[in-house]
Image 1: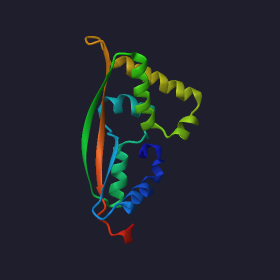
Image 2: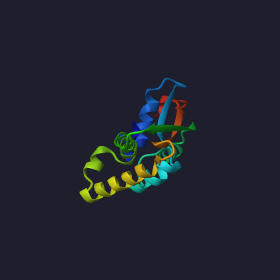
Image 3: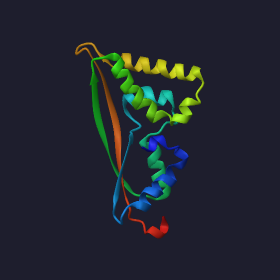
Length: 152
């Protein structure tokens, strides 16, 4: 749940993960990939500094930690607009803000984000199939504890 952790703390978070892994143990970190319609048309417009795997890649490279990754595309389909909107809100706002940052936003910014969300939801409607559809692209990043514990 790195997207609930302030990005400034990600290096410590990663080092803590590595410190509790057995030698050659692995950890899987899943974050929104910085690509695709969901990311570009919603997340970046809500908060360009939101959590995504591109930020994690920068942290891992700065720490000199090797990793492997793959992009996983998941499609969500919903007939009910309000259910779809709530699902997209959860995905987007969890990636874009930690709770305290969102709560501190002025009401005008929250209203602006809500309008972006509504626009995205409306544009996600497939009239031919009468459903709302979103494809979310996640990056699955695997790190391995190949560092001596004395370095952690």
